Length: 485
Image 1 (cartoon, rainbow, N blue to C red):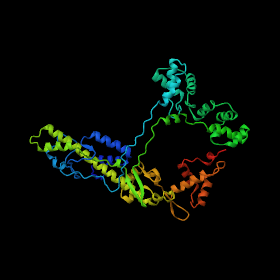
Image 2 (cartoon, rainbow, N blue to C red; image 1 turned 90 degrees about the vertical axis):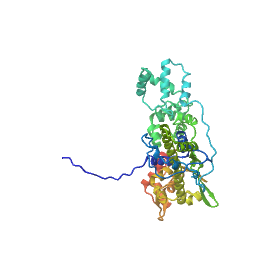
Image 3 (cartoon, rainbow, N blue to C red; image 1 turned 45 degrees about the vertical axis):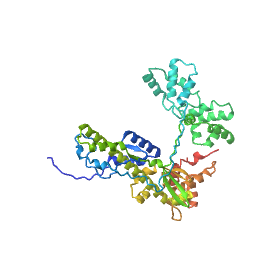
Image 4 (cartoon, helix red, strand yellow; image 1 turned 120 degrees about the vertical axis):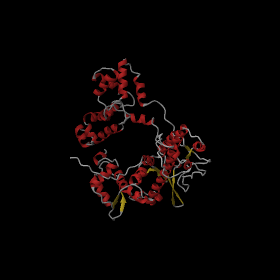
């Protein structure tokens, strides 16, 4: 037997405009400029720059009509006067020290020249190869990544050659042509793993005892070398410690990413545009927002004239009504975008002001030991915003300070109590840990237990597992891998 029931649910959903606003807040300055450019291109009712003519009133009232452009909407219900005003729209850019005059464009020249793949293909053309061998060699070169490695199995490349080039060959033939590719510069290119890459480079060097030992170590004791089991290597090869040191130095001089140097020189350097600037003026902190985050926007004056013409017209044709509906949609979109830019600007400034207030001692001195523990919730509670909004600001925005330009999220850290019961930033502890490891003897590096004991002596009672966690976050290997000859 079927039963009917009635349930009430209360759901909270973000509108499309709210979602777009959240995305806009997350954008750094350069990405925001692209978003602004896109909006100006797509919406003819929106214009940039100062406007001296009469503007539209920035109405915040809710419209009582549909904005979908449906033809069934009666345009007589549209309040034209709501869009027309003789007053200039107030300039939403707050003038009280919240933007900096850094409008000068700082363009980075684009790199030019041949690509890494073209560089390799130009070399393979100097070899005498058949037409089929040239196609296979080019295919192998095309399989090389930016680091200079071929990460795919030869059997997979054989299948691709058959399907895409209609070339059927053997794995032995492919291996032979790969050896030719591996003769190209930079040395080590075309290797399938690190061991092969290092061996290719070593075999191009001049013959000497240390080179022979290095080749022998890589070919027969690669795992022991990687794990730095130097005592086992000394016993296996019956050599003195100085000889082993010379052999290892031969390997350490090699390039583990032969393609990296070439590709890196042809990439366009990433330009960091600070979203904020902090200055110290007469002992006080001054925060400014990059002026590129606060553009001058206004509604197109031509659309004002179009609406006036429609209002004064006695006979309103269907084409005129359709045009007014189009104009209305564009005006609504332009108004929303201007308001969204204003909200974005206010949100950024509010978040950064709270961060400065929380870390005032650090920004005044530059001493990282004065960085207070700070999590996203601390700032969210201070400005009465959601944690996700603070996260969007912190994870993608840069601030220029007297001590360098940094990502805002670098100022956030958890807290930990020292032996005096005071809350200290984990960032401070990580800095001390880095210093201790940097100053240790590389012949006998400190274990995690020893590091925990040293930090305890300095007033930071930290467990060994916490030391291991911080060490991994700092990308510092274990003691055995930090060991040197």
